[in-house]
Length: 444
Image (cartoon, one colour):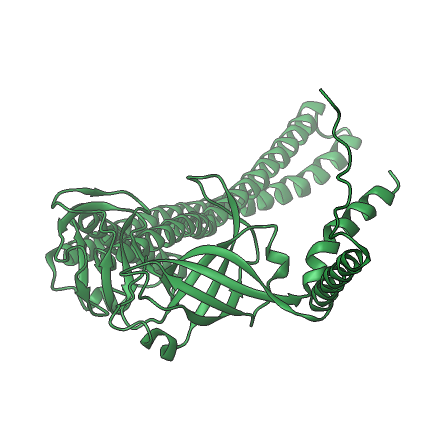
């Protein structure tokens, strides 16, 4: 087969043809240059509005109110249903108060006992003639239970006082007895002292006679033995008196100790009673708080949402959310989820475009809003395990009115475009290249 070569020029291909061909090439090149220059000029001078795209949903501006109970209990009344409108103060749920009420009665009884017992102990400590009970107790003295408590403490007060008085009386009688013994012993001492003086005078005379050999030695020795015996007896009497006086001092101390021991015992018991009373008061205050919460009431006017209890007799666990109350007059905002990589582009006040994904989407217009809040910390979706920042878009009433007849309700899905700073088209092309070179030139 013969190789094909360039087509030789025909008769019509002359200088004019070549000139026309060059002219067409110049026109094409000029057009290309003009288009490229225009495109470059547009890339350098034009401004494109950036936006962070995220998904979100309508929520109420005010926080949804969680209805919880600290200790829980058995549900005995449930007068509301899912979606029902309620007013602030309406009863939402009632718990069984039988156990709580019984505990309150027991604690109240204990506090009454502690009160009357404290009054009796204070009277004993201060040596009063009778206990001075609290006015609150005396105001309920007509009650059989209170009357019984008062009577019991008064009886105990009298018994203990009588016992102490009897002990003191016995000790005082013992002092009187010892005093009489001392008086008798001193009388014996006086008689012995007189007898000792007589013997002393007689002994002086006998000694004189003995020196003159007028009496025998036995007579002198007999008087000397009598003198020594009397002096011994006098010493015994003095010791007896001292011993009796010591017993009197000891008994007097015992009498004083009765009151001191009583005050120490009463003070210790009073401290214990008041500690137990304080503990019982705290427990009763907690029980009274529970009784006040037996009826869970609506904190605000709104709509019952996510009702967790549906039957009478169900058990509400401590801290369990029984239902939510969505405030009825609260403004709606869009809460969107912004990726962590985009959150640095956001600033409060940025404009945003919101597309509500409800109804006939083709006929639902976009509305504008304003970025009102950006979450301070990252969150994590437990279902998808994705991290995000919560951003809230505030909507103006005039913009919401543009959606009519569509009625916005919490939970509607939305697509959000949060505007960021404007950038030139050339920046979109050059930034990846500059970032690549910056990373390549970074020393490692």
